[in-house]
Image (tube, rainbow, N blue to C red; front, side):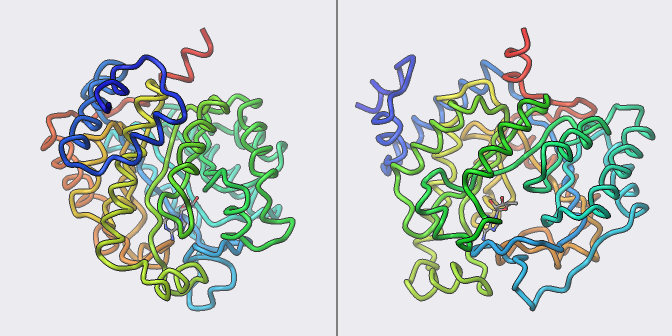
Length: 364
Ligand code: 5AD
């Protein structure tokens, strides 16, 4: 049955559900091997880095699962200055990272917009346009997205979190600021402007079903998404969903293992279904398993996002508990991760953008 599905040209929704439901070791291996062979065919035995710069944890949003949500008063808020961000971007450039991802809590005020514009322009300038820049600063107006695109950003990551709208409502405050439709509109604006567009979901959110996840994968295709960044949900104890998960006994090792596996299966099935998109093996995978990111690569991912945030700030940017690498620095992370990539028989595409092949196929 599984062999039959894995040999199909096009998967149906039922096939996707079937694959996401696999639990037997032997079948899991078949799934991951198939996904990896597709990655090899469309992308090669290569992974690319996106140096992750988490430059501020101020946030106007109050997402019920996220550690840096607005109403978490236990968070020590910080915002890096331009020099600090440029220092990290320079480190990434000197170390031939190819690309960086600028991420922060969400803000829409004018000072923030202008600050980010200036930072993007400066990075673009001092690297002669040779450092790829992915932006991850949440929902903005189309004008702001355009402004940042014109300044030099060319990829944007905005996770849909879940495409089940009821679940979306349950994991966010029920107000205008946290609207599913608004997020979909944002993704459409980003496409229209010309960004390579990334989205993704969390896997294993309390009360999320396998069918929800199958619908998520189909959404990626329907929205013609170029890049996927998704990871297992991880409890943050100072959040409403985190507290609920603990109360419901969903934070046990057994549940964590399940969510981790779900993370790998989602990568694999997304690779099989979408083929030529960029898929990240996210840090959240490693938070649940020390070999999480290597396993992500073997399940079909081709992007890694080493944290290059300055050491002093790492601890303050915790979206979930037990975030790995918070005691590390950029040099250590580079060596560690490059070793991890080589350990699975791949090379790192140093000095290359590592753009989504899907994006360029569409332009032809
Ligand atoms: N567990 C896993 N991922 C999380 N994110 C936020 N909080 C958590 C959590 N508790 C993810 C969201 C967001 C991204 C930046 O981090 O998907 O889009």
